[in-house]
Image 1 (cartoon, one colour):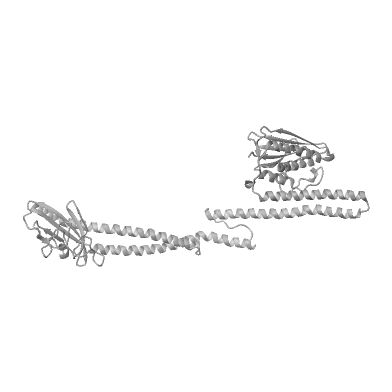
Image 2: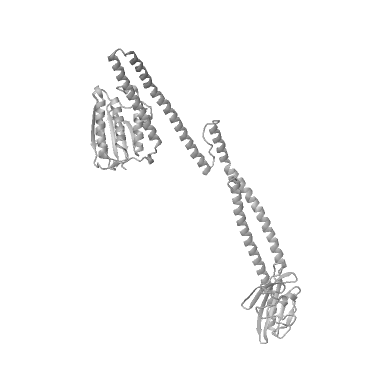
Length: 494
């Protein structure tokens, strides 16, 4: 079955189920029609008995009237002789309580037949043997059974009538040949109808499956064209709102994410190459200048110090790229970071404030902070080192955009739900509205006119957002009402 197509498997499965259901229905119909036919034969035979019972009840001393032509009845007197007998010989011979031709009688519930035959004996063709009752039953004095005589099957009904002279028994038989012919014709019709229904069922299943799988074929062809580069776009989505359309929509969303990821990687590689090219070119130029300054110790020292600065910048850029790559490869739900208490994060904040104050140089930019931590033992899914990198980047950005003599304010607070909120505010010119939506994207920089100094790779805020997201938090950048930019990082409690 595994080598067959889905269309073939569905068709064969539908055909098998249909065959089982239709066969069961055919068997039930056959049994019901056969039971109804035999019930009709018994009813007709009972109606044949009724006039003779009435005659014997009213005139027990008189000879019963002869039956009409074609009516098969037998009236047995109390002494066992037959007053009326139009039954076939084999039928009369097998009557319960009748006398055989050799004078041997059979009692009620017994019968005579071939040696060794029992009440359920059948002939070689599968029907009842000649004269042998089959399905013998007695209810309220009425005896019914079926037997065979002269190649035909008869339904026999017998009733007893007790009078002052004794007990009479009246028998009537109905030839079941017509019912058997009708049943055989019905069986043939059922077989033919079942075969035709199965053929129609299989054709319908094949057609409907083909129609249902047509969108899948179109999707496969479109996927092949996309994989070979012969087409661009999305997989075709059917006009019907079904599971295949949902699959196509899901696959298109997956393709879009893959394209966005590929484009992001391509842009990142391009931007990283561009960012690395500049410090490498500067570093190369300074090395060339250092070669020329071998005879001048002071000039050589200046060149070496400049080279160290460029190397530190290049190292920081490379480390940031590696950190972002590591965070990209790790889903936030799979990060396994030992929880850090709020008190440890406060200690890291103090160290970051000291680093920020030392990094302002001669710009005289003040860095202040305030704390609102009510639960020092609350834990958060971020390491102290990562929290320090967040602070370093935000404080560095804030001091970079602050004017001479300005100030940067760092605020760390716990909300009522114990979420930790870090806010860094500067008093610079603020952030352009067009930059806010892309502020946390990689290699994006604000307008150079806002900068007090030049430099930066455009990766600081991207690293802040990546660390916050890995801890299940969020980031936001906005302009303060009184001027300046406000960067907010929220970290939920573990």
